[in-house]
Image (tube, rainbow, N blue to C red):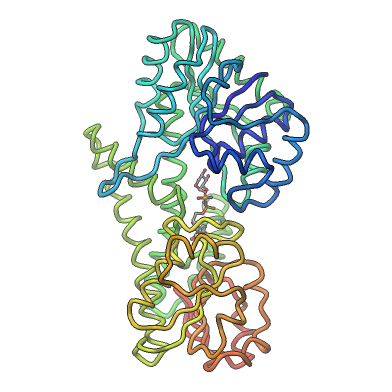
Length: 439
Ligand code: UDX
């Protein structure tokens, strides 16, 4: 099938390369010239395990190319809209300008019978509005909403082997045609028995924001329990293990710690609240405000804990921060809890050395005031405290005995409940973590 993918950020670039891998003829289009040049050169503009190999393979097959010219979408019959919907400055609502301009400029390339498939996370009601625009301007063209659930760090796997396919289809006679086109493009995924949810626009749009709100709520739930554990002396990790054994609850997404960040969960719950307000249903989502509050309080608590272990003052204390990306296996620092904590520690007078296996360049660009070093050993040299803030595998596997020889004070703060407490305390470290007793 001939496909265009509009927007070659995280979602679009991975989607374009994955669709070529499935055998389709794909053009990825973006207004960002350097990004397109990098992609065309088989260079991933972001860190994502397995993506560069996939990109190289797809380009070499001749089935994938990239362009900055929307006219190159003319040959395609199916057009995926994959542009970003960041949070608006100073507001909770999503900034829809990239979606609007992508669809506007795509209109020039559309032909009757073409299908526009939206993948971006949008406020409910967007698809119906865009469908009117598309059908009004290009009679016979159609629009569907086909949300994407990829996780950073697993983007390739999640795109090629999604756990479900959701199609929000036009209510009129075009519904069946649009479905047939989506089934054709995802034929190999459908053939493996992947569950499909065939629905209307509004439901499809809401599936995405509801899923992310649920995940955020689950994380904040366990972090609220961590607050209570801190007040009672209980242990949040054991608590999570114990409640997680109940199948109805499940252990996934119950890791207490610094909480959620990244380019999706925080902005998606806020945009969802804003949209509910516009629809007169704000009460339904007021709990998400508390979810957001609990999440932000964890960052403050982490800074307090660091001050506590540094004998009550951060002034002039050397603090090593291990991990800065919002989660491991990513170089994404958008709304990163780790960086937020690192910056607050520095503002409060600590001498902070940050290290991250992948996000170093991004930190230098966006947070030039922070000192970035290459290795945990450099970061920890002479440190008064070591903070694990993003649980990269190489940090989880650090040898506490050898690492203890580098620091000034053997104090470790485990912001992700990811270290083996006993091996650190056995090596003479003071171990502190959110929601757990001091060790
Ligand atoms: C998320 C959704 O998982 C994905 O389905 C959607 O398409 C996009 O948003 P992503 O942003 O890549 O994906 O990250 P995710 O793995 O969900 O983690 C989000 C944040 O929650 C991270 O900061 C992570 O550290 C944190 N987290 C996750 C916890 O604090 N505890 C947990 O138990 C799980």
